[in-house]
Image (tube, rainbow, N blue to C red):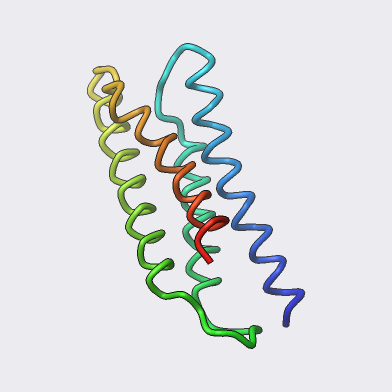
Length: 117
């Protein structure tokens, strides 16, 4: 069971890497647009994170406050991606605050996972 949990953690990390990697490519590539790859990364990280929130294959108590905070950050990132995508579809540019908040919140979510025990 522990091996399966580690595989889900790995998939969760892949989701973060896809989200943040796609964001970084846009941030430092000059376009600063929302891409479908960011949506896919968010979905992968979210589904794997919810699977990790279930108390299976572990012998210790989960920190549900931490899980709740990470879920709220995930929902905010999703909302920002939706706002940015909607503006792009209308032909407008993504507001810089929305774009940069996506990257900052993605890093915050990763930091919460590592630092908060």
